[in-house]
Every structure is written in structure tokens, then in C-alpha cells.
Image 1 (spheres, helix red, strand yellow):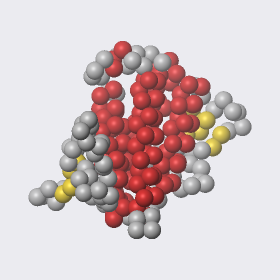
Image 2 (cartoon, rainbow, N blue to C red):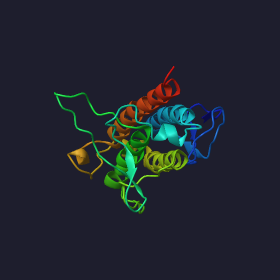
Image 3 (cartoon, helix red, strand yellow):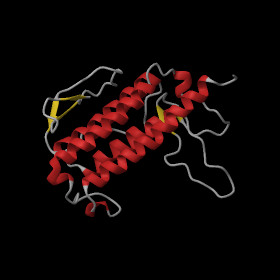
Length: 208
């Protein structure tokens, strides 16, 4: 992340490829303060998460630390799809455990891509949202693309629209602001991103 000589202007990267630690990418100038601050926090979360996802192997991506993990699995056609959209909790049993692959799908397709579909008008053709790449490299790239789709739309709003009611979307969201949507997305990214990092740590220490 790079700041210009004018501290009121933040330069935000929009390259969908995962960033390399210590490398600055910049091609968008954001003068509005609220938008600038939101994008700065998202960029910090993104750089940390994608930094931890570097060199993710297929074995880690699909690792099931317990026997009843929820993941993405290939169908008869060879296409990987998410097995369970939202794991349900039960007072009689521990919460289900999900794989890194499922969590990456959840952040990318269910959350960030879903927000673009439901809350913005210029929606590209995304295809089947239950489908997800079966390899770690392609899964991380798909996450990066969904991240860029969402954050570029937040960046384009400007503070006035960011702080105004969305005007569309399910479940009462039409009356909420894009700022609240962005903060909600940040919670999802941070929550599941932290879980992904923990799973990587556990995988690397399996059997130690």
C-alpha cells in the first residue's frame, strides 16, 4: 500500500492477483476520506490473508482435520462444488469443521461475489456460485478476482453514496448503507481469514 505526498489521498491497488509481501501496487487514487479509510483497512486485511496463502498446496487446501469435515468435492462431471452452503449448529454437537477450500469459497463466492450480485447493478456473469476450483492455486486466484470485483465497486461509490441507503438487496438491506455492507464484508473476511490461517498452522504441525 502506497501513500502519496498528500496524506489525504490513498492509492489503492486493483490488480486481482494476490499481492506479494513488501510490493506496492497502485493504480487508483481515492480522495474521499471515508472511502479511503475503508479501502485502507481492506487492503491491510487482503495483504495479510494473501500473504498467508502463498505456496498453499492442494493437500492443505483439501485437508480434513476431522472425519466429518465440510468441503468442496468433485461431482460425477469432475467439477468441484461446495457440499454445504452454510453449516448448521446444533446444541447437541460441536459446530461443523470446514476445510480451507470451503472457507476460501465462502469468502469469495458466497460473501464478496454475493454482495456484488445483490447490492450493485453492474453485475457480470458469474455462472454457478456453487462451483469452485479444485486446486489451491486456482482457488486463491478465484478469491482474488471476487475480492477485486467487490472492492472496486466500493471504491467507485464515493463518500456520499457510501453513506447513503443502498436502495436494493434482500433482508432489509435496502435501508442500510454501503458503509455497513463494507464493514459486514470486513467481518466475514477477517473471521474466515483467521480460520484459514489457523488451519494452515495446524496442518504444518500435524504429527509434531
